[in-house]
Amino acid sequence: LAVTELAPKRLGTWLGHLIDLLAAVPSVVFGLWGIFFLIPRMKGLEMWLARYLDFIPLFSNPSHTFGKSVFAAAVVLAIMTLPIVAAIAREVFRQVPQGNREAALALGATRWEMIRMAVLPPSKGGVVGGIMLGLGRALGETIAVALVLGATYGITFHVLQPGGNTIAANIALKFGEAGATGRSALIASGLVLFAITLAVNMAARTIVYRSTRVSREAAV
Image (tube, rainbow, N blue to C red; front, side, top):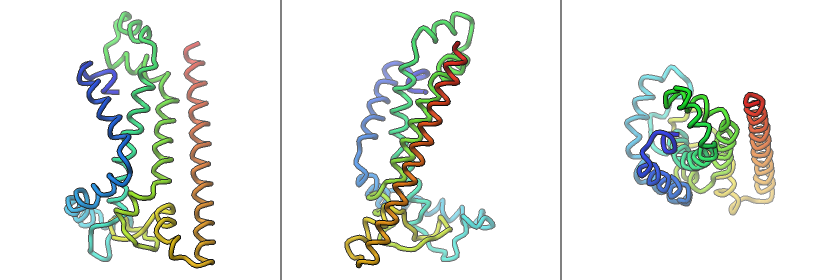
């Protein structure tokens, strides 16, 4: 929204190119960046969270070791999917007719009021669709999570504690060494991941359809 509506035209163009470039970066680059740059600099934040939010089970860390945690992997995934969502949202905002903006400004609306009344309502469906698309990529991400968490197995409910893994990363790390029973279990987990991704995509389509219908009814 800032790129298309608030930033100067030249700055918005450069920021748009930067967003497109980040959206095209391979997952392995984000994974390596997370290992060598992000994780060493996140230990202080993780220690602070474990110290002051220890009463919340999610942030407690019984092992008192920090590093390759689910929290770090989540931050890497958030940074990795943000350019995709931003790129889609930027294109959605660009599709809003310029006449809507000019009409709102001509009626005396401020820039923020123009954005709130003329730009955001017809763009809700596309923005939600972009968010769901980013969520779908995060759910199916493999290599970045595998690099950040390493070859760790098991389930942990403490996001600051080293360990844990996602379904996709677990399949990639264990499939080559698994026996017949293990491969059957991994295939079953892949089916579960497929069902989750399908449910997310169906929910996204439903939300986009309803948002678009509400926007059209409001316009009429």
